[in-house]
Length: 156
Image (cartoon, rainbow, N blue to C red; front, top):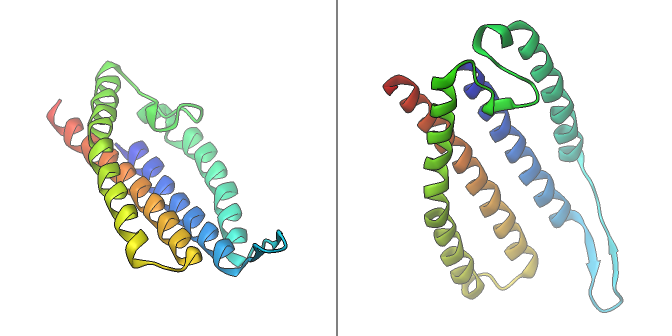
């Protein structure tokens, strides 16, 4: 169970950092539609995101070396690595749980995106809203997988 919590917590942190990085780039970049000129600006958030990605790679490596043999963690498989047949079934059922939730959550996103077209007039703010919504939904999917995995782990 530790490996799932480890992987999914890092996935949520990485998703939040990437979302903030894209929002930062969108909000600070200069785009001139008339002339077709643009200037992308990458701020401190991107440095933080890239640093965390490198740190996550190192964490996965050291986690595999220290705890991997005990709980069946494989760096290449990540959260899908399994120590036994039961963990394979738990992972499959948790994935199915997320798969079943995807249409409902994306439908909510579609409705919010449609409604925001009437409420948000600035295209930059609209872009920020959509990026934030996609990042939020990805985090929700990671959390659903983690919760489903923990519940199924205790039931099976």
